[in-house]
Amino acid sequence: MNKYVKRYLIDALGGMAQGLFASLLIGTIVKTLGQQLLRLGSNPIFTFLVDAGAFASDAHVVGAAMAVGIGFAMQVPALVLFTLAATGSAANVSGGAGGPLAVLFIAILSAEAGCLVSKKTKVDIIVTPLVTLLTGALLTVLTAKYIGKAASAFGNIIVWATTLRPFLMGMIISLLVGVLLTLPVSSAAICAALGLTGLAGGAAVAGCCAQMVGFAVLSFKENRWSGLLSQGLGTSMLQMPNIIKNPKIWIPACLTSLITGPVATCIFKMEMNGAAVSSGMGTCGLVGQIGVISGWFNPSQAALSHGASAITPSGFDWLGLILVCFVLPGILTWLFGKFFRKLGWIKDGDLVLENN
Image (cartoon, rainbow, N blue to C red; front, side):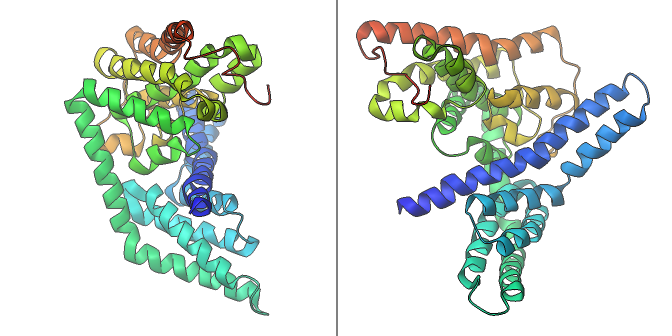
């Protein structure tokens, strides 16, 4: 069971997230940059940036990138991997707003079907891609639309509930997505599959930042600057071995997320309207913050479907982004950590990173 959980819920989700980064996310960043530069005046280079970003964020390209990422993470044979590009493209387009979840499901099953026949015949170059493609095509026709609708509907419920009850949902989403970020699963892929944007996306960003910046500051005594950078701009997942040894070290960051989530949704009304994958990234490469900023100027399709529109950010918006993503997570987690160290729940050496 552990083997399959790792293969399908950890490796596959991680590969899907990387595919999203390499297509939709980078495409959105480049496109938004080009669009903002064009405000300064017409220029072929700026136009090229917009076109390049549009190519990378096209639904067909994004689907192919996700499927290939999934196959690569599952370490499938080359012929299966290459054929997954077509499968993922079809699944993402057919799945609509919930396309990423359809790609995950269909790419996994198509990959496994291809693996069953790979190198079993003398005409492997025909049989393996044929089985992979037909399996993916059949599953796309039969299920992609319904998987997409289910994922989109569930995501819509979360977004609607957050708008209706921003304080409570801000706490819940911030805590849950932040915890998922630190666990060995892809919070980014889950947010993308659900199309988590708007206030819900903002709460998710807050929770992820609480974990990443929180652990970076909390463990500064043990890990110094290398730990600050590897966790603050990399991932709080590095602390999982220490969390398993002493789960109490997780409490400060979790308490912080319960505070910063409602601060984001109720006080600053911070919305993450960029690519939904950014909601589950936090400060990793500053992707969460780039998602918020790009969403101000160029909302994603998922955000537009929830009623988002482009805005000109005010000083209050910028202040909220800085406080929620950087200042509050660092200060609050440090204060909680100091309290728990005095209680003896956290001891010196509990937060040392293995490779630091």
